[in-house]
Length: 117
Image (tube, rainbow, N blue to C red):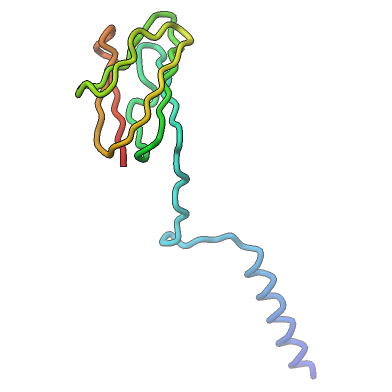
């Protein structure tokens, strides 16, 4: 009888412990959440983050947090924000996969890229 109670106690403890853990082995990583809108900040004459990755159909929003105007111009000509005043924004929806390099043509050292999957 003691042996049966001992086995039942072990089984109950094992069931309790297995239900209390959220451990995942390295091969069981959670899929990343889809990003529908990615924000890029223009600050200190830089795009932050400089390089981003989004899915086709996602919209990227650039916000000018500097005290001077900037723009966002694709190297391939796909988009051109025009001048973005301080505190202004520009949105662009990426429909097709590819690599889209861009810069601020007002301040040529400001460069960035969007990888669309």
